[in-house]
Length: 230
Image (cartoon, rainbow, N blue to C red; front, top):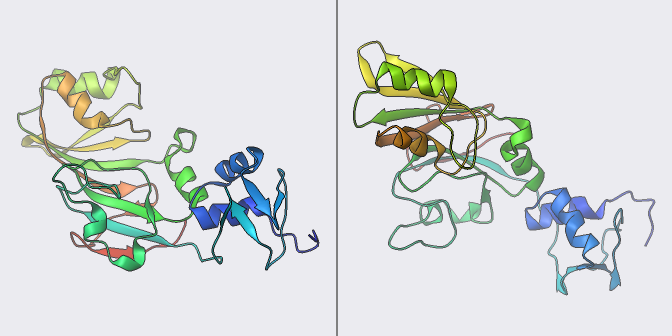
């Protein structure tokens, strides 16, 4: 196998499998990858036309990276497998995008911006806490948020068992204490709902409008559009 082509095996695997290059290196290090039936090692390269297998299964031909933004409706889960009676986002996403994976999650009762891609490195950069990608949500509470509780969340933070970044609150208008713009950089599972819940509030609506440099804009509910990696 010539090294003059400078084709990195981990980059190829990341593209084929929709994983990060780090995860691809883990597969190689675990001796699960072969090139022309020879076990690959870290830093390996390949030539076009080589037979590349993962756990004995031949990989397909190389495809291009894809990145899309999707306006998720409520009552849909971000999973390929149906959970109970809830449909998945793949029930309404066009089949041409079914090979893409969600970048992070929105729970069933939440709506708004979801990114999908087959680029594992992009997904890693968008979701790992060290990159601190800002997310913005419109939140509607069942009851008005008391000024003391607003201060507790914004200034002192409400400690959850699994941590998470501090939430920044901004009122949508001066006369409504039920509707808030919530900004965060690192999200734990259902962190916004659990933060308000710890103070006795129920979140009636949670809608994500921004994720890092991407904004929902005028994208209609249930619609999808191609975006560029930024």
